[in-house]
Length: 450
Image 1 (tube, one colour):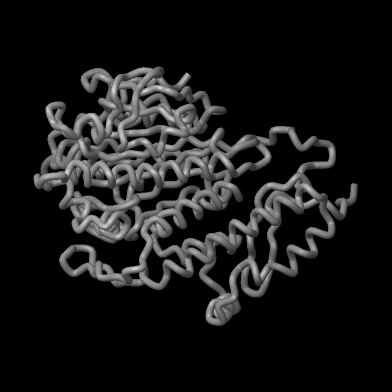
Image 2 (tube, one colour):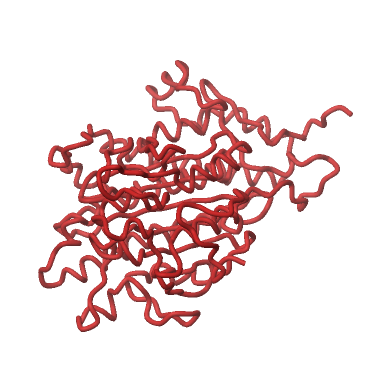
């Protein structure tokens, strides 16, 4: 049977001078015998967002405890959020707040070093540094074959950092850190090359002339829209609008992000960037890129290190730029001055608002299987509760309602009985990366996963 003029392959692209732009799923990509509602191998996705230095936990006797303690008041479904997590209030039905979890091998190490093991559960005590594969890479090895990129590893600083102060969440099967990407233009360009090649000469010329991706594929999109239905036309318009918005923000971010970084000496980092810099716009541009990657099914596994441990990298300066606090995040976490709990809690709330934004974007973005959030399980958190205390990790799980995840409560686990690796095992199984164990796991996490 000949191919109908309005039928397009799931891997179809829009093409322009030097670019090849991936498309989201459209109804015209369904086989002629299938309905728009037919599930065609629902993608199961996994995502991790990390922040450093722990969270504000004012002691119970402090006047700031009720308002700025990161963990909610009361457990169960009737938990009460403090101001630290209030940005997540609209998403109560889509999140689970988890307390008490940590990696046993990391509980005795300096809190910043525990960041190396957040997704591995490895043993970095002493000089041997026996780290292991991270959960995202285990998933990538099992489900990554179904996508163009097995995984994406993103951060604010890029590279791998160094032992005990990494700038990546991803570790290979030998426990070696895998470089993360942070330059948004380079990340953005990867979405428009079907085999991930370096930027072509034609595209370099278009970049030099400041022509955006949407401008370059406009003619091809018009051609395609003449062949397809009204609903798909609307989807293409929405997608190209989102694409354009992300690229415009990337262009704005490029005015300050291209600052040389040195891996080993944080004192040499240049934080004297343009006073008009908007870290929220920068973080959200990366989050938008992640949504686009899921929407086009380029990958189903993403990690994002939102900032780096121990006051290193761009993220250290976010409190000053975003909230006007004249201190870096790491300094706030060690501060004992009057009012520092409010400063720390305010920044915790700022970070939570970025996560809330990401949840909403996943919820609002749909493919042929429904909302992206329904088939994506996302973990947000840190590797220490308060600075240097690698226990009781602050964790918020979101999404995955179609993957057997039950939300709506705050659960405080007993660390003697439940290591964090149980959570990672459950997440791996939920996305189809079947495994009986991971790191030092003792089972699954039935309180949240069915």
